[in-house]
Image 1 (cartoon, helix red, strand yellow):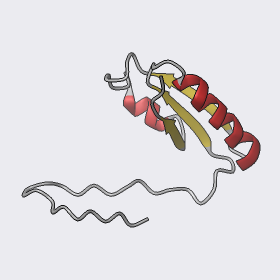
Image 2 (cartoon, helix red, strand yellow; image 1 turned 45 degrees about the vertical axis):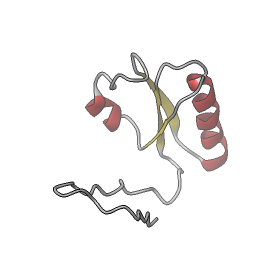
Image 3 (cartoon, one colour; image 1 turned 30 degrees about the vertical axis):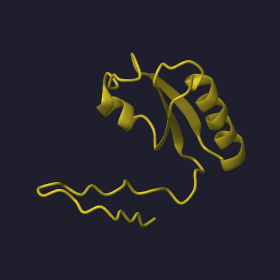
Image 4 (cartoon, one colour; image 1 turned 135 degrees about the horizontal axis):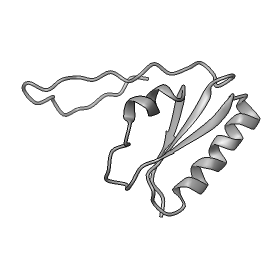
Length: 91
């Protein structure tokens, strides 16, 4: 995917590339990073369930943040615990 931004980068800014995307989800571990907002867990759990059923994902593991504006407690463990992640916001 190429993302084009017509706004020039600020002086001294760093360009960050996106993480590589898997070709498919067969056998991949799905991670859910729940931001603790109402209904976020329900929405993402259903999406993850469908990814297991329809795309052959290996399973689902959920982590819950202490709040929407708070970072994950142990982000290195979270990152190592799944191959792809769902995260989002809901109310």
